[in-house]
Image (cartoon, rainbow, N blue to C red; front, side):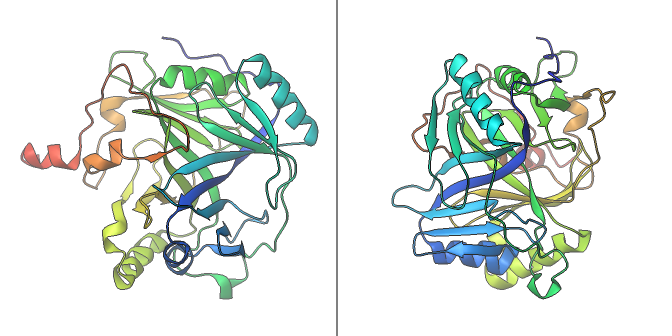
Length: 334
């Protein structure tokens, strides 16, 4: 397999990861987790929907929670484009690719385009959104982990190579990738538009499914404070993995599961990779998966994810064998 070539003059201009839309069973329980524990700001709410943003975000929402019956799901992930003209260009390009597109009305957003990518991931593009006060220095509103802004999504897909090819064809650049030792196969790909290592990440697995949405937090002590607070509020079991440090990127992280099982990552943000001479960084799987000073993730971290509404997951051609916490303990903790 080969790494796709970057497209420096893309068919339309995506600027960044924007928001995710999730369904939940109990909005009050979700509010207690995301607002009272994590520290998101409520932009708007009604009996069926909760619109949240980080303290450094001026746009209306980066996380939308909708009350729904049935199993909680991910509705879609959102990307911002630069202009209204880019929305029209996006529709032309995706129509020509033979993929579904549809104009929709979405509260608090400008004109919005619903599409599906080559993997079947439901995406929505918008160019504008209502604006709310940016609260980055309004310290009376800061609590919990003090989430700053949305940074990226990670998705499980059955074919990482095809996902990489599609997203690079619309202008995303490959910043880092993980390959099995001694091969050039794309195991994990980290793709970006806003200039840090990733806006969207693809990993192999039954999918498409949303593994997590990630939000940056400001200080290292917030990782430990939010875990202490989770224990105090009865959410200790919702801490799934971490605090720890990633191999690729070297960022600190903690992964938590909300009351409906959706996964959120809190992390401190990465370095810049926007310059044209920045080539993708290759990681051997053995090195990328090395534990720094934390234990490996539980097996559920590798295989569990939120299903997209109306999209049947497909299994990858090859099943991975990651080093899970369970395997690590069984091997004698060496």
